[in-house]
Length: 141
Image (tube, rainbow, N blue to C red; front, side, top):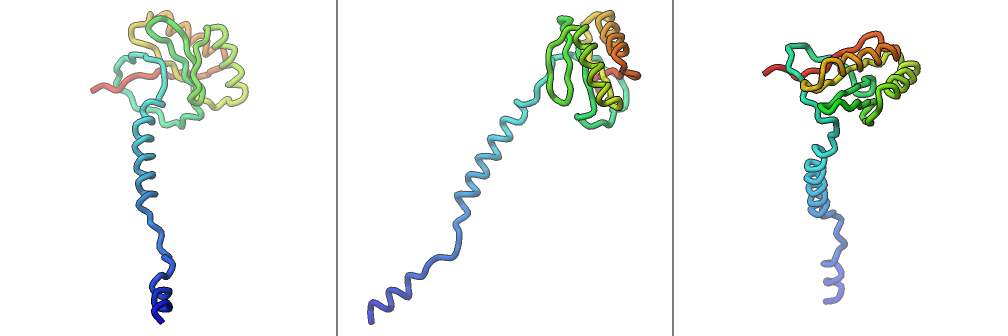
């Protein structure tokens, strides 16, 4: 009779201990919070300040051509960025705009780069078939 009482006391637990899962979730959250700012890549361009309204476009339908302080050209399409020569940039932009003619084209120029480099980039973009080219600036404080 003593044995039958012990069997009744040792019932299987039907509860799940979620504390280890919460610990893992918090560790993953911290890891993502630390690595997310590191994933933002781009050309280090010091943009001029201007009082202008922002353009409301999604990242996927914007093509950004950049000129850095050294005069190097970059092309950013949907988050993929590459260094490129001006002639190759014009050819690649022409192909992209043939596939997606509604894509917005923007120019990011470092404020220390010569005016001629920015104008040359804009001429190359218009030669590739971009009807309108916008300039990216930093908002004034």
